[in-house]
Image (tube, rainbow, N blue to C red):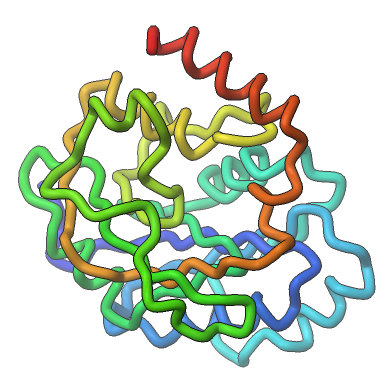
Length: 231
């Protein structure tokens, strides 16, 4: 049974992007839903950036601020955040994405008896934060497992899920760790609910991980997920 005002743990990952980080952080503090635990993970920035990042952190009470140096990758850093999390629900946020102010409130409201994962639509913005007049990842009527088996149409920043020891990102994958997690959730019998609302801003810029990852790593991750889940 869900509490009336459950704690939501937001795991904010950052890496050498101070200005983007500041905007992402401000989008968390602008949430209409207030029972939020914020865990910030720096997954391997240079020391100068870390100092600047701490200096730019607004004077709010944070649940935790964990500096991850020499981290093993995005999956590893996200899992560290989940380990620290005390919330009933988990939400991960990359520093180049932004929440709409009502994002967490709307997701929490969508949880009903038996619902384990809520996901939603996303708006594309450019490197300067200007709306690009299009949606990311497509709009659908409901959770679509057949499409999910073909490609990852749900981004990890779009989901809010129940905290569980059984839910972790695959740290061996250098890319597509979002897809693997969502497939895992589905195969574990988790129930999904889709909100037909734009609640996230996804920043398109040259330094996104998906733009700099090796095609070899991309293909390797794809084959691992395909074989693991019989796709």
